[in-house]
Amino acid sequence: MSLVKKFATVASGTLMSRVFGLTREMLMAAALGTGPVADAFNAAFRFPNTFRRLFAEGAFNAAFVPLFAKEIEANGMEGAKRFSEEVFGVLFTVLMALTILMELSMPLIVRTVIAPGFLDDPVKFGNTVSMAIIMFPYLACMSLAAMMSGMLNSLHRYFAAAVAPVFLNVILIGVLAYAWYKGHDGITIGYGLSWGVMAAGLVQLAIVWFAVRNAGISIGFRLPHFTPNVRRLLVLALPAAITGGITQINLLVNTNIASGREGAVTSLANADRVYQLPLGVVGIAVATVLLPELARALRSGNLKEAGSLQNRSVEFILFLTLPAAAALLVMSEPIIRLLLERGEFTVESTRRVSNILAVYGLGLPAFVLIKAFIPGFFAREDTRTPMIFAAVSVVINVSMALTLFPLMAETGIATAEVTAGWVNAILLFVTLVWRGHWGRDIPLLTRIPRLIFSAAAMALVLYYAIQWAAPYLASHTPVHVQAPVVFGLILLSMVVYFLLAFATGGASFGMIRRNVKRGSKTPAAPPEDPAA
Image (cartoon, rainbow, N blue to C red; front, side, top):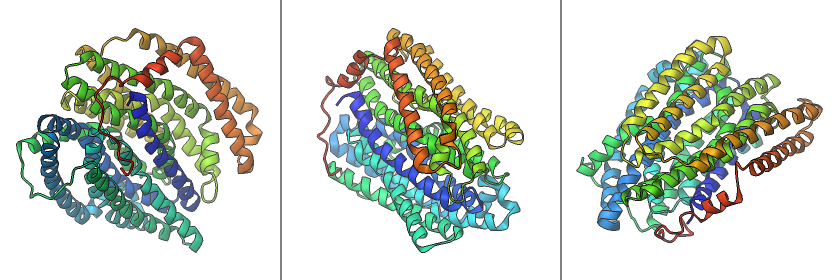
């Protein structure tokens, strides 16, 4: 299967999840706006979600995948099954202990870590604590699911792990639809969503568990023992968890700071959901596929193929994220107005969220490039270096957020996050080049400035088109008028960008053909089970 086809397989599942997530966010915005219940739910959900991405996406996609793949190569499927059972026993025990500890400590954690700004409002603080207690077991479900997703990715079965997150959004949309049908008030909706998150964790775990069984590995429970393989995994996983979840660390810190202003937590969450669409579809797809492919190439000693994988991934990323970043920067307000401005979500809410989204647009290429650069370290079992750079970016984010929040409110927090992301991306890239782990690729170097020019020109055309279409994008304009105008602007921007990209040589049909054909000479993956 070609590199682009593998990206597309993961991206299709992620796109489904992001589209449903955007639908969920639209319904939540209409039901709760940016009020106190929305703030309480988003702050409470941020905590288990941050841990999930730290320990699940960060640690296991970074540390578990190379070790599991190595075990398959050395000892076959039976050895891989034994290794996965050893890890499962330790992981399950640790997660149960962590969940109990966090549940008992939740009032202290909310007061000191999640949302100290809520202390002035006892009702909001109490709701945040209660919702966080309900939702925290979601972490245990998703961490176990992440381990099984890593197994599926190593076996080249990408779809089940990519599509499982869709069910979180499907369940929450169902909760919101039921609440609308029954006419529930805001606080009832908030608690309904919290229980929905808990249920979604169990559903997602069940999906990947059945997919792993269909792949030929049945995981049994073993009493926890720190075998050499498990110790090696833990040594790699701790820094990997910090590194892979750096964006989530920053978001948790930013939630803490933003809790000092009414509506700021929810405004950041709303903007984050919209920009997660391009970030998730491109970034997660690249990171998920690139790590096992790069580890395989390095194990076989094929450095040329490893270099080509990295360069083609960056080429693919920039080709898609530069226009997305330019579009978010220029037309964030029409997008937010169309998607969210109704019900409890006001004109002022649109202004606040669109300002944040425009800033996030500037950071989109950096956040996606980080996901492409980190596998270059993890595939070589170096998780320490990215951890150091992650720590540097956290320091930059926290110091800038504390400085800018009093001056720019939540927009200052977004600015700090984007700056920290670019610093992290640059440090990762420079280190790869300095160590000789990133081969110079002349075609890529010549395409980058042309793609930047194409995206900038597209943004200029889009800016003037928005000015012309302003009467059709105003707050009082009906949705059935706004929607075709916004989609027309998106279509116009795509036409302009792709015409310029191909005309200037930033992209070519040969480039696309090479990426699509890539991988035909690699060993065949196990056949994909349609049921998985």
